[in-house]
Image 1 (cartoon, rainbow, N blue to C red):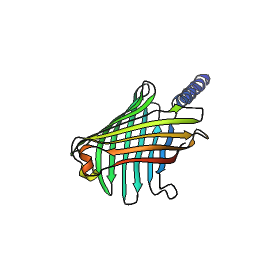
Image 2: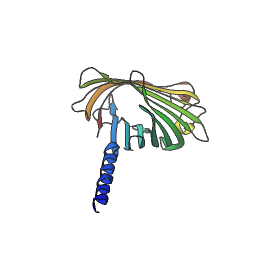
Image 3: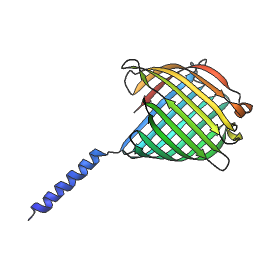
Image 4: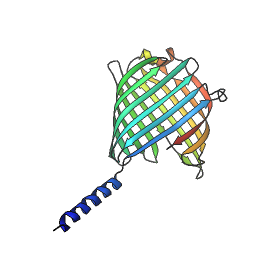
Length: 226
């Protein structure tokens, strides 16, 4: 008489164990860019970061993104907290909130983003941000070119646009900025890779009245994840 409940218990335990193995909770922290620019290498006074972290399951995750730069007398950052849902192979839809800061001033946004791989494995992310003041659009793409099993060349481009001026962020209406870069990293292990490269950043159109930028810089940094 005790065989049935005993067997049921085993089946239930096996089912739960299998389910846990099929879709375990995972968490990852990735510092895709942690770098300084030419002329500041010895003191790291000009620091650029692009960090993301997530925790969740195959389909549902919580993401935290932080990207920005800090130099003597100026700083800016974009920080996002998003819920992410996988909607197709290699594609996630994300929704949440973002706080942008520039030199001590901050602006909040509601965010909808699409993240995934387009053909030929370009990693892309398209972000639509909305608040009562403006609508903003950010698009970025990156490609990892394996020169050897350890040497990786990564071209990257990012564009930003606003529907109207956002003076707190020093941004004008229209296409506001472009950033491109080319970085070459060496993966001593997959989780740790120093790199060198070159980056170009420029403001465009109405944004130039707030911050006329047109810079080419050599960069050096590390990429790490765990």
